[in-house]
Length: 306
Image (tube, rainbow, N blue to C red; front, side, top):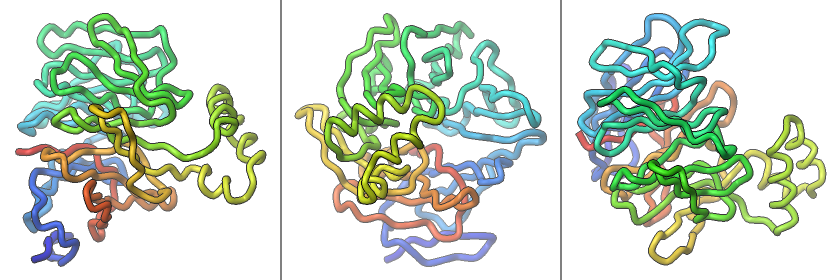
């Protein structure tokens, strides 16, 4: 039995992942809409279309009734954090320019990373906090542990940390990686990384600290290393119980974030071949097989169980 996906009203047979469940959401590549695919059905559903501006990213609470959006309201304006309830969009003040918002599991808090640090906003009290004593990766989507007491996030220099949301205290868990995502059961962390020697890692970390240095770093590598380092990471799975990581893909052209299925068996991600190509892929974390959802172009952002 194969999965059928509907594109513009027509059903397309694909994939073999007929046991996938939940709602997979993505932002269309033109930045105008959020679309939901209720897997494994044949239909696609338009969730929200912005009137003015662009949607850069979003996240969705478990029941699908509320979303946090990173938007550009007008050309030239900075990225803003907004809350979407049904069709009502409201800007969250003081968040500053952000990129990838993330709901806590209970839907009561939103976290995002901006140039100041980690921004936390409470939906219940509308209070906010910022952990600004460290340079976090602004393209890292904060990923919550199941108890909502800790988030996992990467730094600009390729370290991955657990961060206590009360004290801001951080603990390094992965020495070389970026863009982590915690599975729903809290046992695994998916992240992006590359294999290389310590000298190359040191050079890369140095190059992450100022503009233009990354290109200079690439010129120091031989042709094979350039193929593997030049914007093509692999997906790794970190086992929290054992502290060990396993590489489960080849090197990919991939845009963050990595999105776990609610049952923890799959990862969805966006495959980027060019500025105008955004293929949505689903990876079986056990068999390591990847299937591409046909004829869909956008950036995958959320996977809910309802």
